[in-house]
Length: 180
Image (tube, rainbow, N blue to C red; front, side, top):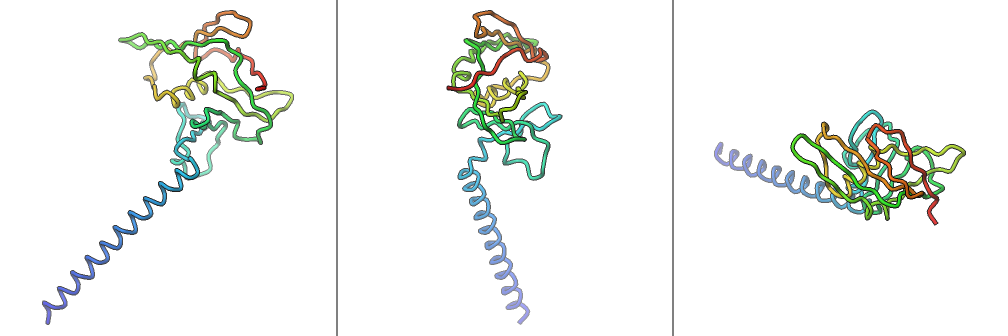
């Protein structure tokens, strides 16, 4: 009699375990479908006070976001207001220069910048993204990341044909052009 109860308990335990595993698998699968459907894995938030962007799908609470980057469309948007105008950066060419303690790397940003857009609400004063945010968008797009102690510069040919060298600490020295 006791042996029969033990077998029944083992059978129930297995059934519950299999059911739990099946539910976990289903919920995991459905979460991936939701992420894919809403394209959450390609949205990145720039949270105030943080140095790197965070994927949208990894945030569960209300954060103080300023910018959101959508890597599928290569579009950066100011998060706090409704978008009314789309802009591009008026550089003719840009080259990223990265120096670490043991290597010197250079990357051409022209292809990235040719499709990169910035969505803003048009007011008398435009809120312009910082250079580190733009470089982070390129890093997301290209999947190229650098150590925090790397010296990063940007060699730019602006819309006037003048060459500029910008560092991550440089004040914003570019103009946005309304996309036509």
